[in-house]
Length: 389
Ligand code: FES
Image (cartoon, rainbow, N blue to C red; front, side, top):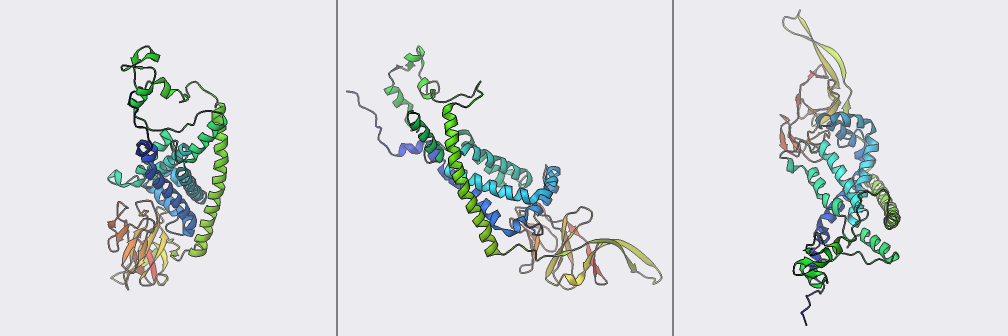
């Protein structure tokens, strides 16, 4: 009697890509879920006056992104966009973690990652240091193959539909093709009797490909697919309800614990004017055009204020580190366009979004992810007023 191959359970299931990709699935899903909830819980994310807000990031991206003109149009819809991004991240995260409508969630993850690549990490250099491009490609296995037939709600739905229709369980198990050949009644010395002696290959095996539906020439869903979509929609509605409760809870907790978003940063209202100064000889006066930023005593020693740069509409920052010393920069961080702030404790300029650090005296980049320093502006104090020259 021929010896039967060893078919006991055990580690061979880890040969399936769906098991091998489980850590990646957990990471992607967990990261997107966390990112979405973090945005919802952060009161400053939707506060237009906050330097780390979606508004600030869009304004910055409109000047640095290759699709800057499109981004500029989105600034007026920043709040809606911010809420949409946060809820989208939650939906993608939940879908990937649970393996529910996995391909759709992966497509959403790829679209969002690509959008962030174009607006946030496009200038990362070398290119592989930007995470968004990596996220984009990390989603591709789930777009191509879904979450597999184990450990996902998609698998549960497929099994439920199969049971209702009296079909065999669709679960896939890793079995070496040599074992299939040993058990196949059509295998004959490397050829397939069912295919008139064609070579026996896994890719051409009619038994192995039989249940894979083809979309070619089809216009409608089959009953089987319609049933799968309907049951999936029921699951998706239940999960969406739970995710909505979780999102609302994150938003409420964030505001209770973190407080309602308020901007503590002094904002100076710029006024374009002319300043008059007297030089030697006393009878000679010159008029210097400039922009009045505001009263110098509005910016105490050790603090800073923001203002709008008249020529570009971008945010500027004026810092008063020591008595009689004024420093000013274009405050747009080159990474994702957040508005930088001044940390008096360590005398550095930092970006509140992803912690880029800039030199106080020169604006040079000390550490990224920003890829350039801050453009220096000339601010002087005259007669108790601050002027941008
Ligand atoms: S926006 Fe990312 S570090 Fe500044």
